[in-house]
Image (cartoon, rainbow, N blue to C red):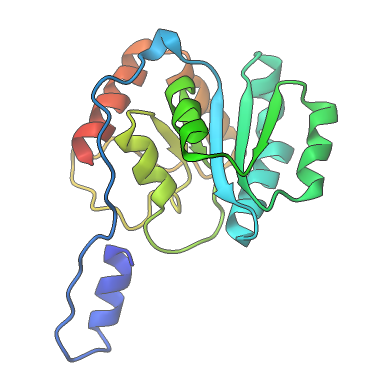
Length: 191
């Protein structure tokens, strides 16, 4: 559960509640840098409706402009819907990788410049956000993507909730080595 869900439950449960974040990721020490990476990446199980809805919305409303800028997109995960493959006709830089192994997933994270999390619904802390941050990969996502994470005044992420904001935020991080390095370092330190 997220901190917000914990706070909600405390209003209704009189017994003591204990909040223990159940995420354990090793933080990358020698991850490849900005110049050694290319493209954007999404990971998710597509039997989970928020992943499916978020990715289809991203392909319909955001990716076209990024594709025109020659930014590759890799989508990895399980239970890929057939409709997702249809987008490869329109987007030649779209790669779909079903059922990747842990080793392949490590390679995907090490080679991508940005992890995208364009969720429009969902609950709890998103493991894909925590995982990307731990690997030193900057994340561009919606408010829902960053939901449940403790956020102090030094928290660098903000949600990109419209297609225009998502596109602009991806371009901002993708094209600025300085910004990319700042977010990469922040993610590893945060985790």
